[in-house]
Image (cartoon, rainbow over all chains, first blue to last red):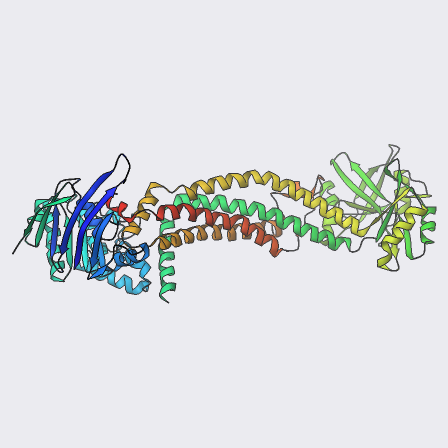
Length: 228
Length: 377
């Protein structure tokens, strides 16, 4: 589904503080599978997720999404692809404070131009899916860590993307909530979502829901492990 | 439809964003409204009072002839009026008797005037509302006056002028000719000035020129010149007030620029999140545009409405002393509502447009950041 060919990402290119974040990664992400990128901090996991999710352009290399080359597309088109094809779950949840859980879930769908009532209905059904119906109209700062995490997953799903990208999703969760999160990932996989997670949490990469684990270090892939 | 929905959705989010930063935005709206209110009040007031003065002056003489001695206004010999009357094109010429009277007890200046219509009986006076309020005088009251030689005389108030004409009649005292001459010590062969009317209005300047040539020690003043002077006076007063207010305007511009341009770290973070979850740069700019537009338009409208109420329903209570002059006999009157669309448009372009633009530029800079920064927030 997603093909990466010899991807390189260099920050501050040509300057004394030049830093190679990812270095010649070639990778194929299969549809409807769960892929985990594991490795220590600074290994290039987050940068690789940004590149795959059309948030950053690679310095060199090519990316194709469902057979379409997207590396050279202008920013506007990349934004549209990002909005339609990818849903993001961030390490810090990145919910917008001061507005309700429901409004946070709708946010990525505002620029699509769909009517508010349609969006509201969709957001409420997503919140219901994650047992958050009662918290739908609570401001996000009143939510617990686990609830905020689930709101951010609901937000990632509001545009019905085919790929979910999660960056260190369990970094701020305890063991129980981390296991709950992986359970949700299992359910999303059943709903035919492709999931890419960057994590160095064993609860994540040892979970039964995961199909493939790639170990990264210094911007390169060290080993590839596929589960049967 | 989807474009409309998109803008509506963005506007929805903008409104809830504004409510989230309630304190900051309320402070901004209050200061903004105050500035628009002050500027609009001055503009409305000067415009309306100029209009009022023009209406009042419609009934004033077409030419006023004064005698000038050593560059100053002096009494006009009554026989000058016969000379003026003989000039071709003059329909009528009448001598006028008027002057000022300082009342030390009230610290006020009255305008004393001999009125032919309505005629005032000897020993009686008709006073304006301002005079009546100042000395608490009503009909049939006896009011003392000091003569030119220091002795005292008194008059009975026969009537009080209607409040409709208060703008011009507030400080007026109408008196009979003999009482006026006796009080001021003006002999019968002199008048204060002359009111001249022409047969053909187009010949006014020609007649004024002839008077000047035949009577070189006089100064003919046409109605147009008086109107221009009034306009200049109120423009000047309005200008002075605007200059004082410009300090406040500059302070506001600095505040607005700071509030609008200096995006807080929270706002930057939010823009980063929005870009990360699929908002385009143009969507973020649209959001900031709506934000600026909502604040500036609501403040502008509120300021204009308050200024309208202040000027036309509350007699410009805040600017009255500066704009109406030095007299202690302030007229109590309501200006006829009058607004100049060009002035409103100017005010709009000087307040709403710069503010809205100043909110977009920094947001545009923030909105062009790479969306991947959200991954590292």
